[in-house]
Every structure is written in C-alpha cells, then in structure tokens.
Picture 1: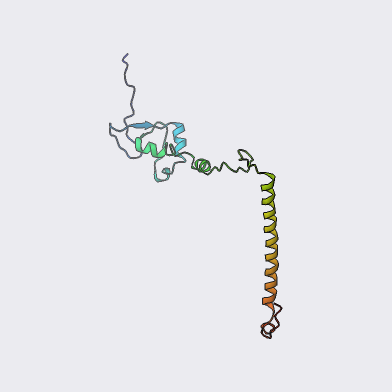
Picture 2: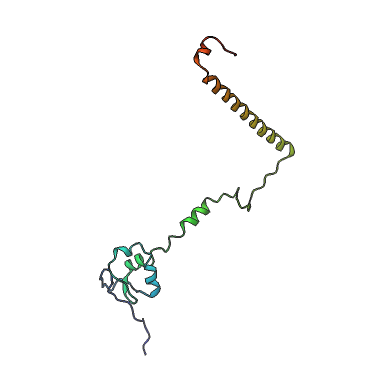
Length: 145
C-alpha cells in the first residue's frame, strides 16, 4: 500500500462548470447545504445543490462560508457605546461623594430653579391674559404698570 496524498477534489464546479486543476474544489455535505439556504447568493443560482456536488473556492465561499469573519455587528456596537459611568442595571456605577455642604447647596439651587420656573409660568399666563384684552383698553391709557 502506498501512502501519499489522498483523493483530491478536481472539479468541475456545479455552478460555473470550471474544471481548472489549479483551483481548489470543495465537496458539499449535508451541513454545508443547510448553510447555503441562508446565503444571499443562493437566489441567483438556478441549480439544485446536492450532497457530494463540488464547488470552486469562489462559489463555496459565496454560498457556504459567506458569514465568516463578519462578526456580530450588534454586539460590537453595544460594546463600543458602553458607558461605564452609568448602567441602568446598577452594575459598575461610579460613586460620587459630596460633603453635606456641597449637597445642600446643590439642593437649594435646584429648589430655586423650580421656584423660578413657577414664577415664569405665572408671568406667561399673565402676559397671555394681557394680550387677550382688547386693544382699545390699552390705547386709552388704562395701563396698570
């Protein structure tokens, strides 16, 4: 018995019919045929693929290994946008320590902002009422300002 290189797939390609000995050919298995069902190129091929059919390297890559090396783009975007300072789950939060005085100042400023917003809303309603009055009352000099 002689040892050596086993049987090599020599073609021809089922899709293009190419039979060049310099090109690598691959046989289709049951699993590789299942992988071709999701291939975007399968719609352009009018041939029904079967087990043990041979494909050239180009068509094998287009039909069977079309998704290799592309990765999960959703996951990579999620990892890139991962803000380590805030997580809604409560994990990996950065903690900020404030003195009581600084906290009280911030709280008072927030309360004064709320009071100013209420005052602005009141003034806006007064202005709307003033603008709604007839022009004649304003022209006669009936100003309360």
